[in-house]
Image (cartoon, rainbow, N blue to C red; front, side):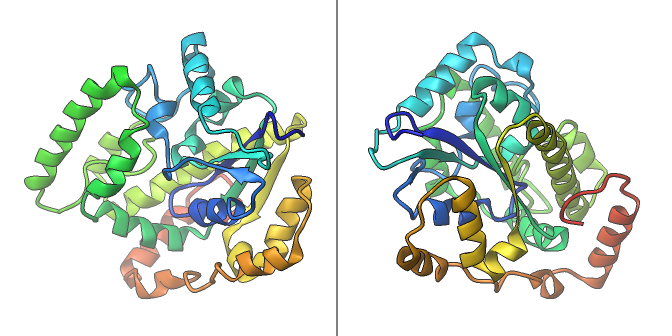
Length: 290
């Protein structure tokens, strides 16, 4: 590994599963570099903006798309200490093969979290106001040719939000195939759970294939990470061949707290919890967080 050509490190995880805190912890070390914005989903969807989901396939990774995204990553200022460029857009859960087609040989960290806590946290996001400040930070990553499309889409969403009776966002987080139709006949907590299931199941199937084929894929439990951050961070850095600075490690670990574990018990109603349990009991695919 050389600092002249940092490797790509993709943090893969469903929304509200700890991708942010993991990214923030890693980029606290000088060996990691990232974007000035949480997510760059607009860039990933270059030339595919009007595709109705985030489930992009290898077929979407045309030469034009590859060139644009490679140029996007290369635009990050060179840092002589950086060994990895870290990217954590949540929608990447749904398109791991697409990413691997563009950046073969990359490293992946998959972080997974208890679905009850994920649903409780996601509910707040679906019901939140549109954050204009945050949105403006993401706008700089919109490809120039896609600006007209996203401008119309944003205006449409704003109008819908104004006249919405349930005060729920029209769209939030990774868009799995059929999300709009699913929402029409679903409760909001079931939508959050389905979003988690789709993201985790698709990501895990793809990442396990890469792992079995020899790619470097790390699997991290959110609960383990926040309960014992020093141990988790040490394991991650060792697997990434990063030399440990134990004094700095202790300092960074103090930024991680376990207070969000099990928080759903005070956020979800008994009915919501039972509905989630029933759905998970009927789910026929074994996920790491279950």
